[in-house]
Structures are given as structure tokens and as C-alpha cells.
Image (cartoon, rainbow, N blue to C red; front, side, top):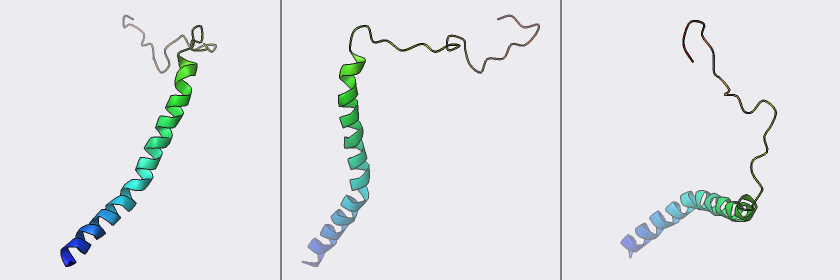
Length: 66
């Protein structure tokens, strides 16, 4: 009986530790499921912002080829 209670205690602690992350995972999957139809609509590409076509963070060094 003592061994059974030890196993039960370990399972309870594991469930308490895993519950928040599993809840967050389910929340993320629900949001992804809601966003998927919007992403797959035809003609709904990414909106381009002014200046977004150039590479950010690129630094040109004089004397080096592009």
C-alpha cells in the first residue's frame, strides 16, 4: 500500500508541474486553428510596409563588393 501511495504522489506532482504547459499548448493550438482560415484565404498576402523591402541590419562597407 505504501508503494502505491508513493507512485500516486509522484503522479500528482508530475500532473501539477505539467498542467500549466499543457494548458498553454492547447491554447496555442486553438489560436492556430482560428487563424488558419484567415491565412489560407486567396488574395490575403502579407501587407507590405514602407521600407520593408530592404534588408534590415545590413551594413555596407566601402571597398567590398555587394
